[in-house]
Image 1 (tube, one colour):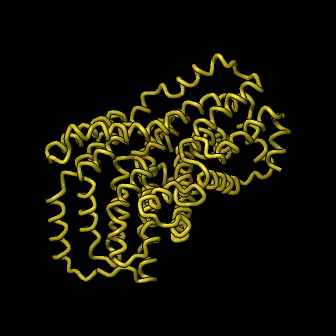
Image 2 (spheres, one colour):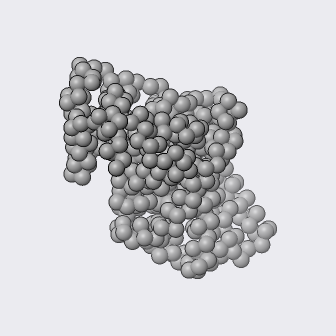
Image 3 (cartoon, rainbow, N blue to C red):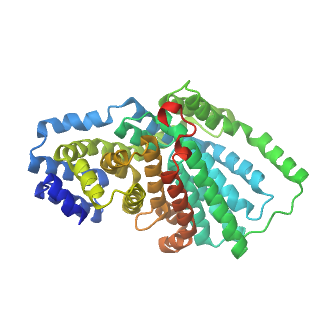
Length: 442
């Protein structure tokens, strides 16, 4: 019914439907996403004739010719250096010292260290891999079933794209023409809300099934334990401190903050003697591989977005959807449903570059703040990281533990539900996303 309405509005033909079918088929055959997007975009342009193919090359490079995108490889590299220098273990020590007085303390520490890692790397998959290697075996030793331990790490690592600085917010800011620094500030409360919801959910589950003991500690013992952990690893917090202070004070752009964080982390690695020049080739190659997945998707999405805009698909989508209902709360639910479903089958970057230009006009039509829309979109997509069939974080933790993805996904259901509740609050309560912003954005 929906696509019939779109077809009547903008008169879509096979020049639209065939590339869409091709894209779905290529993804189903495990063709790289960037290649599927590129093939579909070029096919759409050839069949429609809306944009001369001679301009495709220019469009590709224009899509990635942005200073803000330089921050992406810098934050990825910072996260890699953080793991190689052993600074990530200092985060775990402090997180464990903070939560050791509660029942389920190490589970809570695992979620906290995921948030700490997210505040530096901006990548959920990197956080899932790094934290998973440090904590899953210890979680099992503490009494957690291995599938649940994997689900806990996968859920906690979702904060990688939700807590600033986040690569996802850099990309959506580039696509929609919004300052990444503004989005980082707006995402602070929602990101922490997701983190707290995962913490609370784990504590409730732990109470029900009695996975982990603990909590028998006086305040003096807890304070002494925390003091020792901070004394041993306080310097690890210099890196996130630089990033947060630099960006939120306005003294550094996200790119400059990323570059500063890389340099400081490397210097600390040399001082600690946990990093050497011999480590650099492996670090650079590892970070380049991750960056090499993201940039081609952004590049090939540019001509696709132009073709869709020329064909009037975003405007047609708004007209057709608002023709079905004019209730804003129903339209918001529809957008959330689309985003979560898309997050289940495709990675965040292609979802952002394809769906953001289509859904943004609908959000504008119902009067949703553009900052609130961006936060809602990224948070809803984040739910997909622990939801089959794609569930990127599920695959990451399954790969490092050998545990069945379906078993992990089943144990992740409570975390999916708690994250969904936070998404609803973000969607219907604008102040959660805009309360920290200057009045002009509210």
